[in-house]
Image 1 (tube, rainbow, N blue to C red):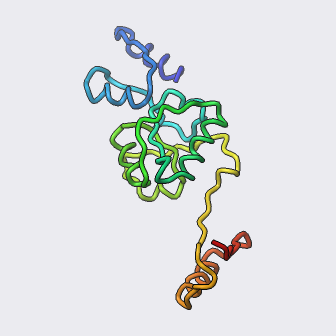
Image 2: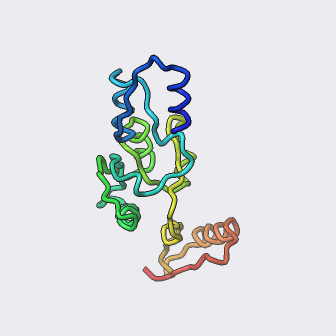
Image 3: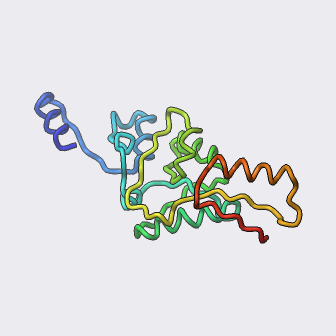
Length: 172
């Protein structure tokens, strides 16, 4: 950014300009309201640290409907010593993406959600994430009620993943 600002001042010495700091959401809203000409926001970055999200409005997973994702998100902020400003809760990834696309805030979502986003949503890798935040999908079933169809599905799932990390837990 300093190089850009120096170049702009050199190329346009008669332009008066002011640098204002704010959240990305607020800056984008001001551009829509025509009260700001332009803004430098996260979208130009390939990665960001948790601490940089401290002032952003956050779209979070619902505590009651998606408690595990909510807990992981809040723990991730807590580990980064960031107190998130939750603007909205949602249960589904598509709802969260829609809220981000509508400039209601930023969100922490699993990378797999990226395939469902429009071109108007930018994904930026969060730095400083430990392996404890890796998500997995498990197959749940009742051992004494396992149908042949369900067993076939489990077999196909194992073949598709071909991972030694798969463990079957037959208790519920």
